Length: 476
Ligand code: G3H
Image (cartoon, rainbow, N blue to C red):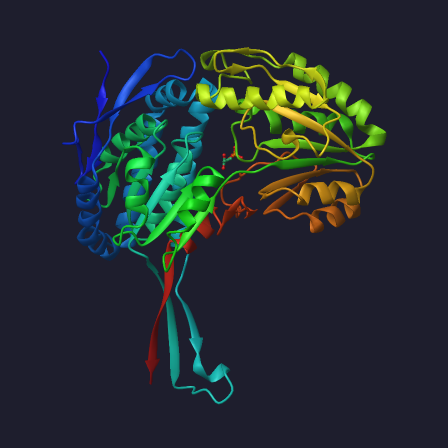
């Protein structure tokens, strides 16, 4: 029997009165995993309104009580890890090992977030430090919550990237309206089932489910939402930013992260970093390496070695823990296949791949991709990697920066000064020297420039984005 999963409001799992349900299809066996509620705008209104009173009480609750509940949630996630991982695997096609790792990474995330906030102390300033200022004036600068945070999470980390918003919001005293990606919504229900077991007060976290096209805009521009934290595609992110008038917003969007390979790089190490950077979870990571910009003098060696490794990649079903798994849905696989077909037609050299079975796209590697081809610029979110040959560091930097995206980049060279010189010119949130592009460890600031985002994620920065300063000024 197929389960109809409920949404969560007022501390209870309830069914929508809309009577509308959305079927969630497994990406790799096409079976119906379950259905989620498509709630109405009126139900969203009720959920948001109820956070208002609850948030005030929550913000007023002793920090150590809030911390204790969040730590209990981390413990509960570890207890429920297998059950949640099972759903992550079924719903978003992540391998079993990665699904389990996602849940344990999330428990660690919560514990660190609690500690980070506990160690955030109020600051103080004296009026006397400003010319003509009074030594009888003191400011105590506190950090207070913004109110109700709207957390919108993507399919590819349905638990981790959700909690990366929920935990900082809650520890700082905010209430949360949590809208997961529809594909990922059942994993979100599982996540909130574990939240529910811990005994948090009602209405400080509401899980709302439904089509973004039905309730997304309505909720985003709702007066009851005080801040939006979104991770997802650049098109949706740009659209959401139109609702940011007087409303703080943090967006973490797509990328086209380049790996720049200099002729003095340690090629074997570079190959291994590019392989895991580009192909893990079939490239369905915003931070995946999505293009290689290699100096022509080492391009043959690099492409031969990459080809050997791509041919060796394990391909299969998530339960068997291969590197390459089926993509999230048919539309995603169609798009990636379209890019592959287009790149062949454009005259690039296909080294490996161009094979598809349903949503499973086999790992595909192209050499001699040029900047007039779509694959040089578009983000596949799939296991397709273009090699672009360059003549100099300047050319690599120019192509890297010509992208609409600027999330991360990798630079591979054994000359540290050269690495730093290149890194300083790259327009991206982070540049990894001799390592793959990736978000973690989770306490590092994480941000993108241009179409890759707005504002900063990462534990301390997320807390900052969900709080504001409030000054108590004491006149002695
Ligand atoms: O998909 C976007 C994620 O923030 C990437 O996280 O680098 O840990 O895979 P990750």
